Length: 403
Ligand SMILES: *Cc1c(COP(=O)(O)O)cnc(C)c1O
Image 1 (spheres, rainbow, N blue to C red):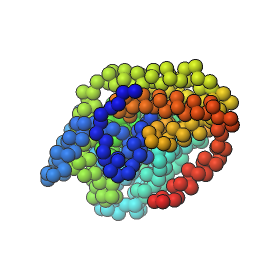
Image 2 (image 1 turned 45 degrees about the vertical axis):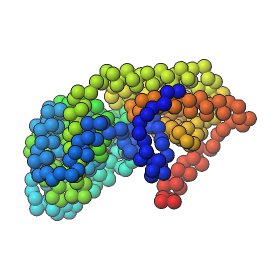
Image 3 (image 1 turned 90 degrees about the vertical axis):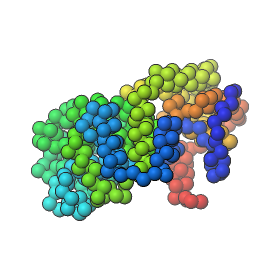
Image 4 (image 1 turned 180 degrees about the vertical axis):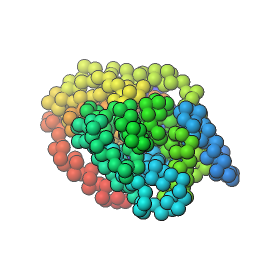
């Protein structure tokens, strides 16, 4: 096994476990590896004063260049961007209304969202809407929404319609974005697209989004931040929310400068080389796992068509002598904790996501998989924690913080 020489004293100093992330860009793990260009930019600006209006102007130009939109704005997170975009659709440029939120009296304040899009990304998307004072109006049923549901839900109080792009949304029988936008636009309703984790910086605007929102700290590898892109007037109305509810969601100079550097770096990133490196990690794991009893591996393309493949491990407990969730939990324990993508682990599988690995960490992951699977094979009893027990344990753990 090759050893990487990355200096990593900070986690040790703080007494934090040196986790390896094969889960994805997860807020709970610190989002993503911030690209070196952003790290440098952040440290360069921290000791300087800037005129924030001008810095936001500069950011707008860079976002415009990358997205093809007229303007752009950086806020604290994509979740903040959802709230501020909704607020902007309600208040327009009315500073009096902006200061009054979340009191929406006199404003259009209904926001439409397909029921199958009402997901949690760690917090409920509809709460980000409601924070503004808006009322959420669900469209259709979780597993079935049609254009007529959307058209029927539009009233003279409709302020906006939110469309979520995510592996979390129900992935069938939803209204496609182009149709969603056509129906909304026919009645003058602006469409906000939450594309937090999507690599595509231009397609959603082209498909009819009026405002498109991204996370700065996911695929882009920026510091914690959210990015808004769209026509100048709409984006200005989002910017103006900084004088209202946006204050508590403000991004500092370091967040803006870091997100800008990450956007610039994205433009010149060698995407093919990264793809090839990710593929080598998958191949390394396949090699380790092939021929092992009760472990079935397959390459899974990203469900929302990001150019990213993951490795799916389906575990047959009778053969492997361990359940998928017990294997995930054992990998997450110990001196080199490996955190896997286990959103759907009750179905007997989890995924390994190669997009946040430091060089050579794939070998550690392979070694840990081999180690835990060997232990399980030798176990007399099948290692099988009842799934309900696992659910209750993880819920209880949250409520015990900071203990
Ligand atoms: C991650 C995510 C968010 C939240 O993004 P933050 O920038 O972390 O606030 C919102 N929507 C979707 C679909 C996400 O995946």
